[in-house]
Every structure is written in structure tokens, then in C-alpha cells.
Length: 495
Image (cartoon, rainbow, N blue to C red):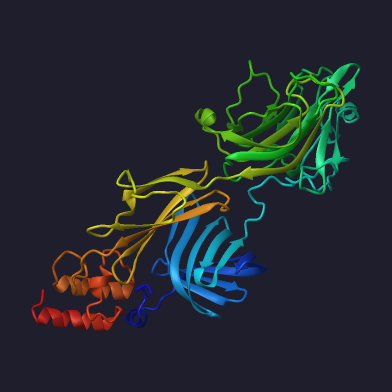
């Protein structure tokens, strides 16, 4: 049990909730190999002492309340990490929690080892993914186009009506291995001997010229157009773009390549292809590496994003522009070239590769090991702990709490931008040698320790307080009787 809010403190000052937020979503409970799903609500209340109370309604376990949970926030992501004995419908259970929130969404891992139980709570859904990424929704306003994805049926430009009858985009029941449903297939065609590449984009296609190589024929995206149908916002930097592709050539040619282009940018006007000699776009923040596809049967591709090459632009990442084509060069390829697309995914990493104390990797470091022990002469300083993490938008948070015996629990957590990937590393720091009554830990027992103890009881703020030394009467609780015991200690001259 943590020593934070005690009887004397509650009597002296009312503990008021400063802020409460509720999250409703699906929880998956795995208990002894059996899985249960339920829709539940998690409530987080910030108390006046700066700590938090989390209340979770769990099937079989009932209402679980975890109090005095510290939180740390970086780049809008807040992480709650704690380990407590929690009352449940099945009795008091030792429980670990790692919850994280961003923009009104929560993901949380809960474990009850004694019950062989793990829980996963998630309200994020597909917020950080591409809409209709599995290409199963074909309820588009445009004929034979998947919702939020476009071919020439929805094209603009002078020759839009002509192009709509040439290159084709449609639904196919030829899907990736292990899947059911539909994929999208884009097919090339020819018009008076000119190859029109099959294309699918989440932007808008423009058919502005009869010349296949004219930059008036392109895909574009621009937030200023004011239509959601041809614009796709992005809420964080992904690390990879995963997709299943199949590329069939109408006439075999080892030199031809289908293309995948994925760009992140600030949402202002951008098009592909464009005149790279005379036009420079400085609104790009990133791009996938690769994207040229040789003829293949169904293959799973994972393209990493490169942000470093675009860092000089200083562009924000607010939108994502994706285009597939039967050939990487306009007018190249053959009629009946076909690219099948299925199951796209944006991957956000959240991994820790090194953990250091005062610049030196901690002893026994292994990313698969999440608990470590250390000894220190005094109170730990979180700034002394640093880490190397993977993830373009991942964050590292740090929190610390003192246990009743004077030891410390330090939590260093890495969380991906979409909250789905996270790891929490715990460093248990042994209590320094104590001296009863030395509440402020300066090595002496005097009237200043009485002041420190009373201030702690009134505020529950344990900063600079040695809780082991503050338990003067050794009852395991810190309350008004410890003030009395400390005064008696000073009167007896035991300092």
C-alpha cells in the first residue's frame, strides 16, 4: 500500500477532484486461456494532490479502483503506470497497469498475475489508419470506386469524361492469401496506341491532356479544396506503410515496374507526377523508401518512411497522399497490366533499444526484460535516466513514486503515436539507509522534520520526504501519531 493520502490529511483538507475524463471502448480479457470481450468505461480522475484515480469496470472482476497513480505527459500523450493491490469481486489482487491517452482516446494494458489474467482496453479504433484500408467499402459516390479511393471515374480536367472510359479501377474477389472479401484492381488500357496507366489514389486524378507524359495528367491533393473525399488527414508520423500487392503484366517485360507512392505533407497543394526540374515542393515532410514493384503474385510489402531527407523543409505532417499505378512512368507499360491492392496498414513503432543511467547502459539491459533493480545513496533524479527509442512519433515518459519502505518505483515508458505499441520498464531503487525522524533526509533530526512531516500530511506531496523515516512509530502508516512520536523523540534528545 502506498503512503499518500492518510486519515489526518483527509480530516485537515478536503481532497477535491480537479479533472475527470471517461473513456468507453472494448476490453479483451484473457483469463486462463479463455477470452472475453465487453464494452466498458474507464474513468480517470485527477486529484488535488496531482495523482490520479482510475476506475475500471471489468467482467468477472467487477469495479477495480486504482488510486494515487502518477502520470507523465509528453507531446500530448499521457502515460499512467502503477502497481497496486486492488479490491475486486474475486478478492484483493496484485495488479499492474499501463494506460496511455491522447486526444480523448485511451489504450491500456492490465495484468493480474495471480489469476493468469491480462486485459487490453482500446478506444482508438482506426483513427490513425487510412480510411477503408481493407478496400471492403465500395459505397462510393463514384461508379466502381472504393470509398475514399479514386480512379478516373471521379477524375477532373478537360479530358475527364474520355479518361473515365479507358483506364479501369474496380473490385475483385482475387484477394491476398488468408483473406476473404475484396481487393481493388487497377488496369491499364490503350487509346490510339497510347497506354493509359491504371491508377488509384486517395487524392483526385486530373486528366488535362491527350499526351500521356503531360504533367496536366496527375494525381493531386489539397486541403483547401474543402472536400473530405479527396483529402486524407494524418495525425502522427507513421514508420512503415504495409500493403499486399499483386502485379500482372499484359505483356511480360522485366524492365517495367508498377509503382507505389506515399507522401506525408502539410496539406497544401501537391501533385504527382510533376516537373522535377522546374518545380520544387517544400511542403513534403516524408516519403516511403522504395515503391517500384516487379511482376509478382500476392506479396506483402513493408515500406519504411524517410523523414530525414525532408527535414530541411520544416513542413508539418498533416496529410497523407497515396497513389498506386500500373507503371512508374506515364505512358509506359502495356494494355491489360493490372495491379491488385489489399489490406493497407500504417505502422507506428514504439520500442526502446537502450536504457541508461548517467549516460551508461544499465546493468543487464535487455529490451525483453522489463524490471531492474538499483541502489542509490539518496532520492533518484529522473533526469539521470535516458533512453534510445524507435518511432518517428513515439514518446518516452518518466514517472516515480516512493514506496512505504522508502524505496522507489521508477517507470520509463515508450509509447507509439497510435498508442497500440508500448513498453514500460520498471526500475526498483532500494531504500537508502534510514534514520527514524529524519523526514527531510538531511541526516539530522530536528524541528524542521516536524514541519516537513506536517506539510506532507496536509498536502500528500512526498517530494523531498523520506517515507521510511517519516513512519516514526513503525506502524506501517504515516499519520498524526507519527508527529506525536517525532516530538517525543526530540524532547528525549534522540537526534
